[in-house]
Length: 597
Image 1 (cartoon, rainbow, N blue to C red):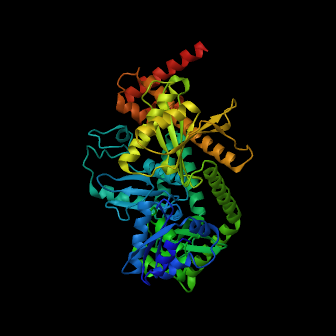
Image 2: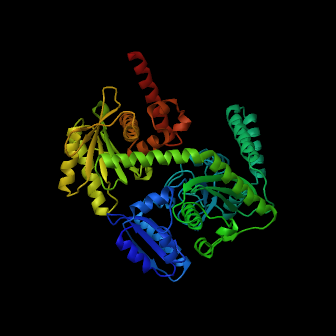
Image 3: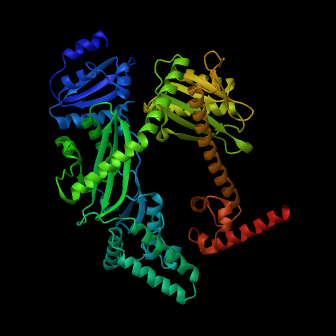
C-alpha cells in the first residue's frame, strides 16, 4: 500500500457512496458500493485477503469515490459506473446466459416469435412467456402454433397476400379486414396454451390429425402426432409446485471458500419450467456480490411478478431497483421452494467448485506469464486476427478477443475484405485499419496486445497501420508448423522467435487462442462461400431478384438443401410458378453433375 492510499483512507467519510479502484495506468479495475465508505474501503487494506480479492488489492495504485445521499443511490451509481467502465474485476455485470422467451405481438398483426436479450421490462402490445429451458423447445412450440393458427408469418409489411394465405395458414392481414372477434378468439386460445392450459390446442391437433387421415394425408397426420407427443413430454417434465399461477423466480445461494454458487428456479403458472446456475468468486462482501448478481441477471431477463429470496438479501436498495415484490417466506410452500433453491446451489458448488478454481488458476497464471514474457505492464485484453481466402474467393478476416484469459464472444468481429484475393499483407492492413479506426472514432476499449496469425509480413502490415493511427500497442505473430499447429511466437518489436516450452501453460494458452480465431474465421468463410455459391446458382433463374435470393439463402442456407426441398417448401419463400422453375432447374443441374461424374 503506497503513501497516497494511506493518506486517502484516513479522509474517507462514514457515508454511503460508490468507490472505484484504479491500477498504475489509472484504469478503473473495480467499482463497488458501500453503506459506509470509510469501513468498506479500509477493509481491503487492513486485513488479509485471499483469492481474487487479494489479486485485485495487489493491483490497486489509487482509488476514487463518490458520496451519495442514500444506499439506493450508491447502488444505482455503482451499476452505471460498471456499465460505463467495464472493470476487469466486476465480472457479474458482463456477459450472462440469456434464456429464450416466446413473444406474442398483437399490433399491427398477431404474430409469435422467439425473443432473447430483454432490455425493456414493459413492452406495448407484447406479451412474454417463459423462460423456456432451451431455444429448441421455444422454436418448436412457435412453429406448432403457427401451423395450427393463421397468424402473420411473413416478414415486413407486404401489400398483397402471399402463399400462406392461399394454403390457409394466414388470414391475409395485409389485404383483408379481419374482425376483432376472430383475432380475440385466436389470441385467447394461444395465450391459454402458453399459460399452461393445453386442452384447446390438444383438441385442435387431434381434430386436424383426423382431418388429414380422412383425406389420406397420413404423413402430415404423423407429423402432428409427433407434436402431440412432444407436448406430453414437455408438460410431463413440469412438476406442480405451488397452487396459485403467479409467475415467480426463487433465488438461493451457497457460499464457501471465497466462492458463491447460485440457483434461480423459474416458476410459471405453478410449474418449474427451468433454472439458472452460476458460480463466481467474491471480491467485495457477500451481500454486495449477491446484489450485483441479481441486478445483472434482471438486466437481460424478464422480471416476474414476484421474487423469493433469502431474508438476508431482502434489502431496500434491491427492492427499489427491481420494483417487483421481493419476499422472504418463513413457512409454507414458498419456504420449501427457497430451501430447494438453496439445496441446488449447494449441489452446484460441490460439483463445480474444483473445476472452476482450476480453470481460473490456469487462465490467470497463463495470462500473467505471457504478460511477464512480453514485459507488459498490463495484459487485460488481447485481440487476435486471422485471414481466410481459400480457393481465391470470398476473402474474409476474423477477430476474437480474450479478456483476462477468457474469450469475450460478444466482442468478436467479422470482416469482408475488399482488396484483391490472396494478398495476405493488404488483407491484414485493411482489417487492422477498419478495426482500430472505428475504435478511435467510437472511443471503445483498446487491447494491450494484438496477435496476428502469421509471421513477419503480417506483423509489418499490422504495425504500419497502427503507426499511421498513432497507436502504441504491442504486436506479436503466431506461426504454425507444416501440420498447421501452433509452433512459434514472434516478437513484433525484435522480430525474433520467443522461446516458449511446448508443455507450458503459456503455450497451451496461445494454442487455444489461435485455434479459436482460426475456427471463428473459417466458419465465417464457409458461410460466405455457401451463400456465394447459392447466389451464383440463383443468377440463372428468371424472376429471382436480390430480395428473393436473400429470402432463399436465409431459409435454406445451401444448394444441397434447396435440391432436397419440395416445390411446396420452396413456394413458402417464393411464388409457386417461380418455385416450379427453380425446382426444375435444380433437378436438371443435378442430373448434369451426375453425368459429368
